[in-house]
Length: 110
Length: 122
Image (cartoon, each protein chain N blue to C red):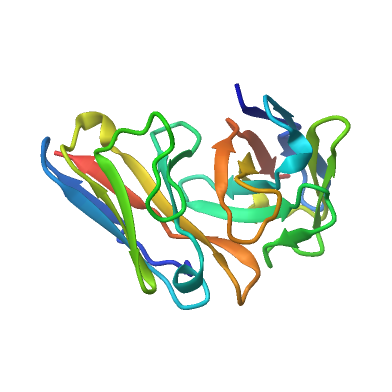
């Protein structure tokens, strides 16, 4: 049972927009930055979004992040086949004094 | 280029020990916190431990507290994870990651290594 709750799966067709949610609490998402990671099959995780809504250089602007209260979302527009991957949210938890990850969302491009 | 490279994984019996290493390059090592994150087969990411830039502050997941020890040698640009009293449930790919800032709290992992596999089995 993860501290952060993500849907286990999401799907969309090429060109569509999909969103992945990440729900937490006041001690984690509510008071700290949210990070999103993309893990392509058989590879290491890669930073996708940092500090809630910032994109590292090289990440397409099709990817965007947002945060409101104790929830965060990752949006992917113009879905492409190469976006098929697992996506994880993460943040610091002030009460537990640990980093916490969501359980991950497997994105399928139909 | 900013890089981190893990080593030291392998097969170990339950109750045994293993030390993982993570060599960093391309950045001022002592200016950044470092972390270990693991992923059991077919499972999600699980944060394990982190150390501040100076090594003076460390944090652990409850699942490894008292068994694992994180340390760093800033003169060698290397962070370590000493794993003792290993259990079958510690079997995973262990990733080393650089954090965004010198402190651990609040600023996340921005560069990840390729991982090293630890298998705990008799």
